Image 1 (tube, rainbow, N blue to C red):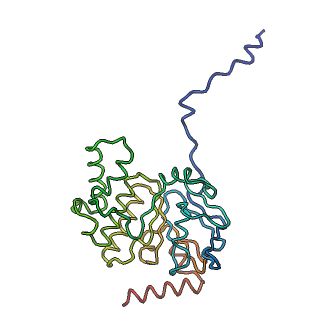
Image 2 (spheres, rainbow, N blue to C red):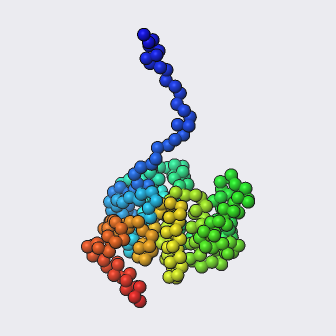
Image 3 (cartoon, helix red, strand yellow):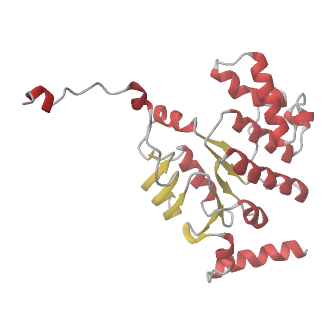
Length: 274
């Protein structure tokens, strides 16, 4: 006959290694849920909803002033929605304070339209800046990582130049390298091909697509450049008057019955013909 202790063996302490195993994240990496944002009487976003899955590149299209850049500002937590919820890195950041947002911004970084480079630092020093902030790398390691990133984005020959010596397109390439130095999970791009020549726009599009494929980065690209969207987008969010009027693939967008979407496509075709 077995004793009570045999029937109910004592529980063992959990294995510490098991405690370190985290469950895989599920659901969208970024999501807007009925997000609205106004500035005075101007309604910039009206009940905007969309999702970005991990590893996707989602392009946000639309005319100037329709809320594209405001969408990025909400993802970064620089702005708060008036209503609705914002999910970033699988977390609801809507009510996060600045301290909590700093943790999110280590995972999600932004490439600003103007590059936002430090004018007094060389290209190499600009890219090295986030690495030095970590305080866990020696100079040789920083040099190797920095040069590798400059090589990846195609600006290694400019390493010792100042930003003032670079074209607009080259500055954006350096800004992308600096963003990557922070080892993010997600990169936000604000109009990456604006004010650059067609060849540089093509190179930047190729770079964004390659980074997505090689590094499995999640990306959100705000743009009015249809050719860029066609090249890099997994899905497209089309904003008009603060609302989402289309959400789907580029091929689906071409078949969209929305007049504003077809007008946008038609205007871009006229630019190509010109």
